[in-house]
Image (cartoon, rainbow over all chains, first blue to last red; front, side, top):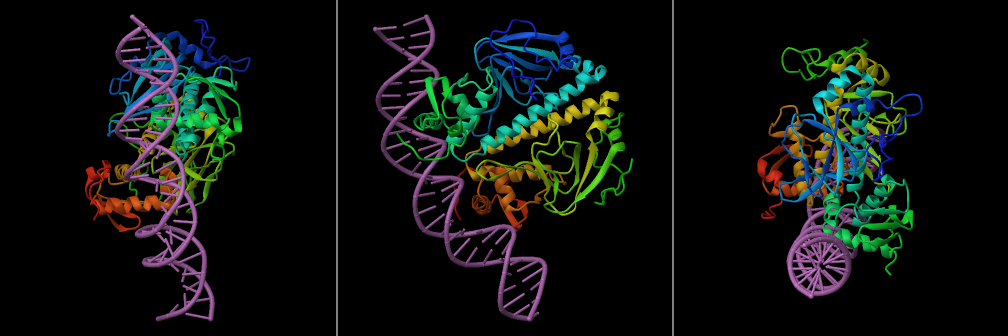
Length: 236
Length: 236
DNA sequence: CGCAAAGTTGACGCGTGTCAACACCGGTGG
DNA sequence: CCACCGGTGTTGACACGCGTCAACTTTGCG
């Protein structure tokens, strides 16, 4: 199960965003809070850069962040979208492989000095296991995302993206989702052009799958139409 | 305990496939060999299935394996291509998320009972750290693969695929690579159709980037043309 | 009010999926 | 030995969806 699920923008500074484990055992992660530093970033601000020494592990507290890469042809690609509860900064080397930037204003992040965290994990095997589990979750997320990327039609990609965002959004499977990112971000995330993302969204709207309150507020109307958005039927 | 048949590939040293760590310290993974069981699979045979209890971690000794998923529209997708040295079976839940099958005949795999491995890691923090590191590597591989998937043209996807396979192939960056898998596998791996894969390969051949000895033997001629295969110049 | 960034919509060319036909290869049985 | 067969790989024809370029509208901010 996921640890996440819990975050809300307006959580107080405590560690209430840390999902409590089932009753009698506390989450081993709590011991890592002793070395956490809270950082706050502006919209677009770099959290760390590619090639820098990987000195920290991070966790999103509130807001959102993106993992960016620039490929040979100059296109930017967004490798990961990081939401509250997500860890990042995991790398097998001693240098970071990608840039990470804040997506929204006042993105708050906890960071943990890597060497100190490793030391903690060495003496607390429960913590070590928990971090492995978190890494496995990140891997599974990445693989699930790959399936999304492999979709043929743009409408399916965008539909699955909105659905996933809704599933992970604060109120669980609520019907309204807000897209914290710009169309450009979505395009780079799904390996599409901005125009195609825009067209896919209006297409989903015309199909009756979603409604767009504002450009960043999506209300999901027909959940199944969203996910299986291939039925090229309607055209209002 | 109970390693019956060591992989018979002409490995001289007992665990030469185990990456030696720098100097004075042995790889912590070696202690995990005490609980390894060696398994052998036929071409196409299932190693484990989606939804089964995740009881083991695995490592490819020789041969190759693929992580498969079937998406809603019935298409098969290959999520991971597992080559010798790669670990798999990592999942945050208690059930496997995907199917894994052997790609080539006589694929040999070591498996480690998950609970026993966790116990070992709990008492040997070096091992725990090493496993985290391996999980981070798997994550990085997955992310690198995503960048490959995000390429626009099929020729770039296939070119990068061949290049990566060459880089990871036994003889390092040798000039001849053999594709252990069928065109169908490549297609499902790159989210393309079989025909497009075939066309991309002949396109690369006509561009002078590669030569095809047989259908599964690729000789790399122009390395840069392979990677930046977008210059839509020649057409023999 | 005015400017710039972000988002939308249209027109058009090209790459890829699809369907189809064919070539190639290994195995089987007459 | 050859005929037959199924699986695999290649090539062609065609339609459609996406990228690109362009123009316009909307939003946000001073």
